[in-house]
Length: 305
Image (tube, rainbow, N blue to C red; front, side):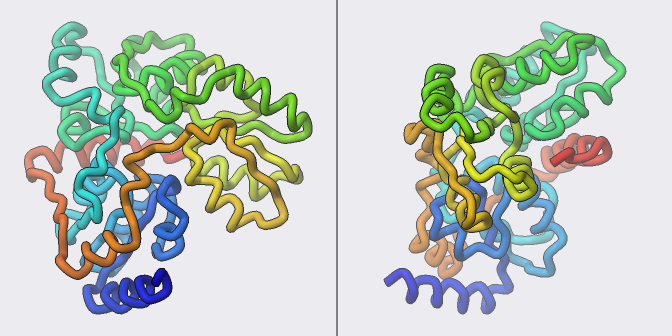
């Protein structure tokens, strides 16, 4: 059944002149059928470079929006239109405008894990990998940082010369990773390196050997002489880690680190998306232009992956 689905997807992909993108947290079988697997921004950049006219984004809604922002002349499809991001949904343009009104003249750094409308209200975007570099690039001493308070707190620690005004958003999946779980995992496997995501709580990051983006983890593991790794991020990344490093062993900090929205995409939904050319993701042009400027300002600083 799975093989016939993959064959149908590949045939339709060619017919539609499409490229399939899958986030690192997607189910393994969806990652395996994709042309590119990676983080949300990296995938959107790859899509903008590709000759394909149709982009099938296997991820959550803000990611497909980012692809639409960077590829306005292409058709962007999301196989599961109900796949949202709880953290991104914690803030909207109205809430950000209210926060800006409380701190007039203070620039806004917006994590890419946010809607197009929120990006459009921001001065510059950042990723989990380049948040520190982006904050340092601004001449201002006070900076509004949205929406992830944990990424903001971890960034604040690295740039004490700045004062970050934080929004109380967070990733529920990364919030499930607790310090005591890190301690127990290290007790069981004392030789293993602990890698966690910067969206984790600061007390979790403090116990880790490295705090890295998903792409940062992939590169670190590939270049590391170590053979065992405890992984503190959404467990979907372990599929790719195992695939690219068959001689190394990976252990999740907790099996609870699962994003239900990321797991909503299936091979059937990818096929249906290509068959019906649904669901198309569009961003209003006035919003798209402003959001694109915030992304381009970030890219000028550098991705830092």
